[in-house]
Length: 113
Length: 109
Image (cartoon, rainbow over all chains, first blue to last red; front, side, top):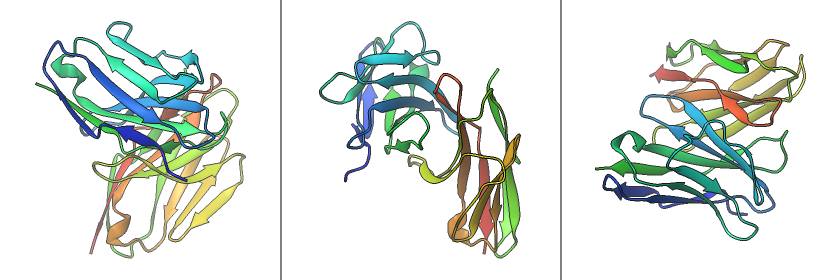
């Protein structure tokens, strides 16, 4: 049973380009969370999704950022027109229910040059 | 406002020197509390789930306990390989999971 898979592990984008981060949850998990982590800082909640629905996006910037979790396929975090301040590690986690532990992927490290 | 805090921010122990990490939370209606370990450059690794005050969980040198307002992660006779950042997290009433800032633990041989 594979764990949470994120790809790519490392992503370099020039300012103004788009970044697409993918997350395949653990088998059977329908709850997905995205977090951002800056160097030497904690995990900051961005968005919580269930299949085809955004449940809570209160931690996600209102502009340039979007997330989806389609019926088929991975969850996608999209960042349009990236800026240097978007450089960070982005982690995805999935859980079986809202009250059970979430399991994390290894993260995508985005560098904006 | 739902909030999770952890103390100390950093902890440096000699190998074999036991200690405790603290996680305090303010959420309406606790739905559980999770402990994770994060190594540099990696995603957090799940350790424990606690659901009710008085509950305890153990794994090797680690023991997690829960009260109505806080949780402790006790580390008994730590080894250098226990060095990591330890995170606690709680689901809020809206089911999003929020994390504390973590405690960075260094165990010196």
